[in-house]
Length: 281
Image 1 (tube, rainbow, N blue to C red):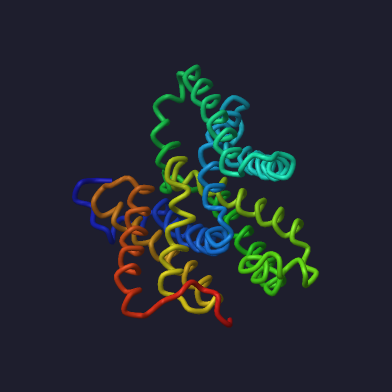
Image 2: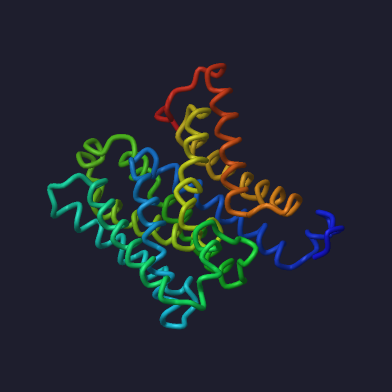
């Protein structure tokens, strides 16, 4: 890539095309799950898993396996363990998550300090490198997007009740515990796959910001979810284009684009007289 390369030239490169497709898919996926996570007050879960994911990445490096393949089972185990801790302990969920992710992060940093050959890549782990997305990553994201949207669509009524009024959902016979666990697992896997693109430190913003922006300008629940997915995808693509055009880090550029989208929604909300999405869908 030369200094005289234009954005059009960059778009012809296979790695840039993979990055844009990955940003589009993962942005939409993060927006969909983030819209539910925000209303269910699970925002801190994505942040805790993002930080803990560094331990999963370290395990992959130590075992000589693609970290993406290690992160998925690691994320599922994290979700299962967290769910059990919250159910069995009297401590607040955010306190437990803080203990888990702080301990995992500490162990990962110690392990990485012993891996001299990987010290040069620590910045990519912390802030992401979506330009390094492979066809394997894209395949996993695509499959996960289909599974997630299919699950949420087939259980739409239960998901809406559980999100907006959990006691009412229980009284209507919704399997609250099962749906909560399945959602945590899906969110964990999404975070694990997206860590490579956005990085350990920024993954929470990737999930939360589009959902918060959508909540400011949506009256209906369905509109809220669709808009969150659209904002996530659009901001990911815009951030990547800005990153390519001005030689900026890709992960932070995506999050900055999301921040601009959030501030725009915040400015528009008072003129629309918005309320939290809880109306008829």
